[in-house]
Image (tube, rainbow, N blue to C red):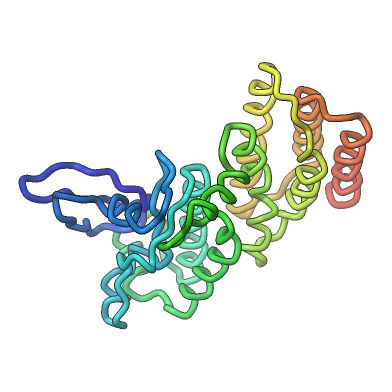
Length: 271
């Protein structure tokens, strides 16, 4: 990940990144995250730093006069958001590698990919990421009010669940060429309708864990070129309904959410 995983090496600390094979040496006195945090009025504890310009392309960007580690190219981000962005970047890489007749699972082919990928396609995807997640980023110079506004959206377990539940809808925009993500857009609308629910009893976590497991599994299947079956769609709808019941969603909202999913499943998936 872009996240700093720091190990002391005499006078230096070395930060490893998920999407690169070359380590970045940083002065021992500060990590990249610490340097960035100083440029933000209030940087939340536990937050991470994301490269708006892909760190794996550090050398190619440098040849264009762009420093991927420059403060203006960094973003402060909640760990849950960062995890999703990293997964999106990995799916983008794997899909593009297949188009280039390269094997995403071979280190040599991955190295060739980063050396030859069209930088225009890189820029297009980086822009889509910024457009999709930008409202959740802290940029250099962010004020305490900016941080408070982002925390209002993502801070806390309950809000993190709502964010995760919107993943499919976000990815349907990030990856418009991938068919089969429409059902997750329906779920995203359901999340918006249930957003005012405030109850969160203990049983909600168990219901969420089951829902999240199915949800992410189906997204992975679609992103890998698979198709969701009618049976899978029905099971997913049932898991979502049980979660809505666990958080005590009013019956009228619950019926609208589940009804919209059932309509989509009946129209697009076949037994």
